[in-house]
Length: 128
Image 1 (cartoon, rainbow, N blue to C red):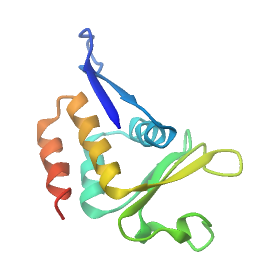
Image 2 (cartoon, rainbow, N blue to C red):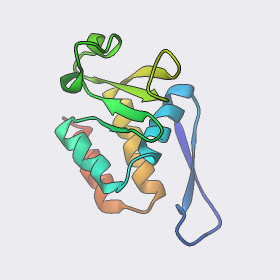
Image 3 (cartoon, rainbow, N blue to C red):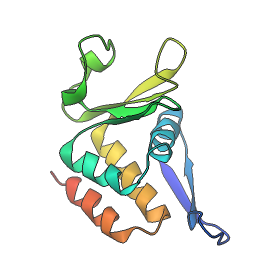
Image 4 (cartoon, rainbow, N blue to C red):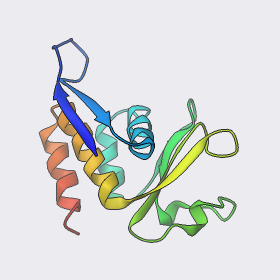
């Protein structure tokens, strides 16, 4: 899973370090780090809507977002998200992650940034 540890306070930086323990979770973290403003991540999760950053090619795709030409995304089912990096294959990579795991990562990301309201928004989704 993702481990969060308190860091030395640095202005403008998260109060906690986020340490994912798998390549899939690292990709989730990279996708979240590529998006700004981070509060939109909670809105996307509430809407079950993906996002993508065209600068680095990181993003998340929900089943309702998929295009017919996205081969791996076409196999997504409810309860899964596809996370990708460097625009996905062939030069990048992608993983299918359970939506519950993704939401846990989003909540942890908000915790690391001391965003209690956004943590509550995401945690409310974990029971749906």
